[in-house]
Length: 150
Image (cartoon, rainbow, N blue to C red; front, side, top):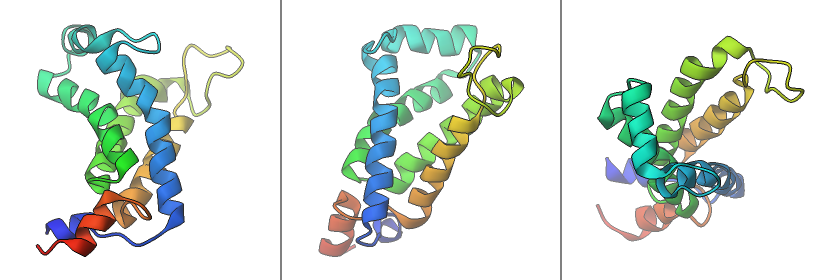
């Protein structure tokens, strides 16, 4: 089972998808965990998710974990499928709960009450490609699945 989760080919396209998805989500995780990029840090973010948004603490913790440790896993290609699943679930829940009511488009011109969900579709699509095919070239998944007997 573990070998199936880690298996991947030597695809450069998967490397590009994996690393750039990690680069896009790194600031979001750093906001939530470290307070970087104008974020509030872990305690305040957890408090907001649990107390204000009504999210059960375990789900709030998993959301933060997906955007922090999950991003590091994506970048290195270790557990790519699991990390990508975390990002995909986060994006579906975020889009459904916060963005669908604002329509499809991002709020480029400032004419909407909030942001649409087009970004979320792209993030889910990239995540699904990684879930289906793995981390690709230069991933730790590839190294371990080829070099360790399970």
